[in-house]
Length: 281
Image 1: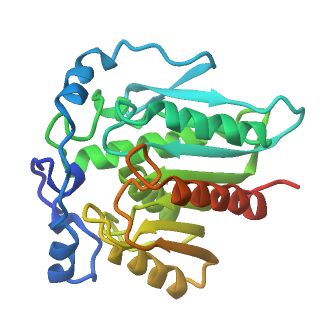
Image 2: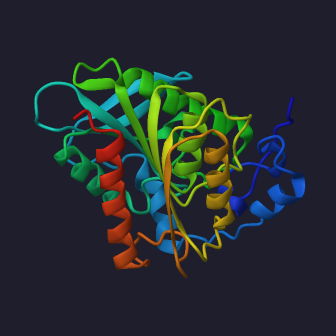
């Protein structure tokens, strides 16, 4: 059994190095967790106080239970009749306090293309707005994973959802979460991950899904080596994957301070990936 402890904002406020996947090598794991986290601005911190009562945009918000907590799902649905592929969108360490409207825009675009999209507020499982608001423990990461797993269970019962076509779209911490969940959950058919990795895996993977890897070459928060480690893991599991490393670009290259051309290219790749590997057509 691993001991539990508090973790600071370093390493995206994720998990202690000793909780990384077995067999990766402690030195390599420590290097992977020597990441720098750019601290949020004072305005961002001030915004956290009002986050909990903020109203979502004008689309349905559903609620399910996980580990005794109410977890919100923002739902974005196609207007087409019948059952449709479902995509779960998992935000990064800042939750919805940074880039929230961008996540919703991604969800709307996917819904317009025939998907049912759930933007899952997995931080509700620990009653926090961001990963860094309170010290993070292994148990919290497990609660977030449980929330995602329970969310999938909730969604596949929906009469408009095709339970055989489940995809995950994760960003940063959300990408780590999506990759871990998909490595244990055979219901997940595909994962599109933006600048995540595998160093937070809590156990060896049971399987690996079809995956799209998108990462900045000069990422100083989650080094590009994470993308290459994921690539090797996918090859070991004979999983289909596509990969794009963007030269000279940093973490969050698709954000407002990123590279517009790379952001456009990454999103086009995302749409094409889901159409090819997740679409029910």
